[in-house]
Length: 82
Figure 1 (cartoon, rainbow, N blue to C red):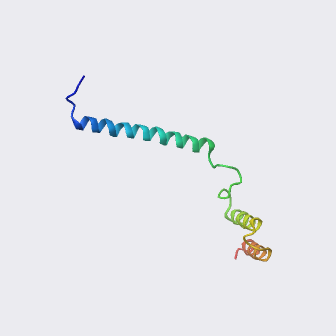
Figure 2: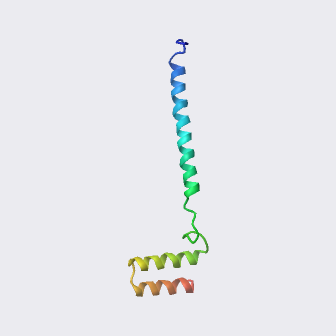
Figure 3: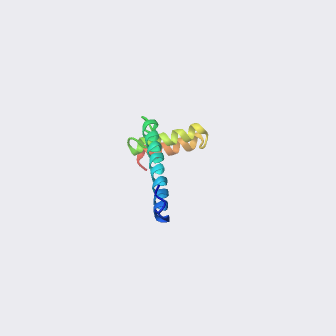
């Protein structure tokens, strides 16, 4: 056995071990996000800006965040281009 390595070698081995496992974990997380990812069709953020805005407005109306009058007013604003 080599007992004469010194503290520098042990410290370097510890750092390399932590780096190795960090890279493995980051790779697994990236793979899971890529495979199971949030890339769904019809997701707000894909497509034209007006369609996205109308979609968000419709979702807010469906959740009850805005009333029917405000929904109609904002929807008309979006369609006329302000």
